[in-house]
Length: 281
Image 1 (cartoon, rainbow, N blue to C red):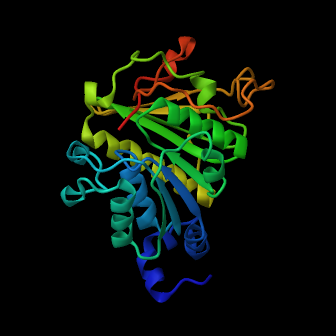
Image 2: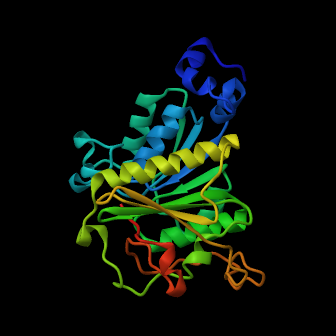
């Protein structure tokens, strides 16, 4: 589809970029991205994807806006307290860009609906505050052959990685959820609000790069950020041939939900170096 005069003006700074141009912008307008979690990370992700002109943004979240969310979840405002997060997020996205269609999924992602949902989109962005959803998104995307970005924040730190094709998946780095109560939740340990913006913006950039085929993605690496030192650290990782889902002899053949829910990336044995933080919102 040809860009309208208003769209040429709106997206002119994209169109000027080598590797984007009018053709790339048209591709973005025809793309479909699913944002899992309309919280701290999902907020900047959805806002930047909307501003970038990603034509269809799906938002899945079963929660309502709470006053304590507003310190970092910038897609919502004070008047939204008590509203479904997908509703307030959709409204805000529409205010930013009427070109964007929002598909609202006001329910919890689970083993029954995850595969069908991710199959409807070109790229998946995960930014929730619990391990079961992170592993579920990873497993569903691996089964469906979908590329995704996964990320998390806790206290003053955040980390993110991207999976595409045969690159390392989340289970290559973290085999399974940690034992219940092994790590604190964000409500217990706290989270520095601006870290959500730092990491969510990285995830949005990864999404647009993937859709346009630009640059190098965060595949086979974990990118971590520490707000106290303002340091970024990139740790190389490798696809594990013994991974239970993407390895040579996978033992996971169907989607299964973990029961425990916490919010931090959990190091696994020798993988500790692959991460200084952990996850949440």
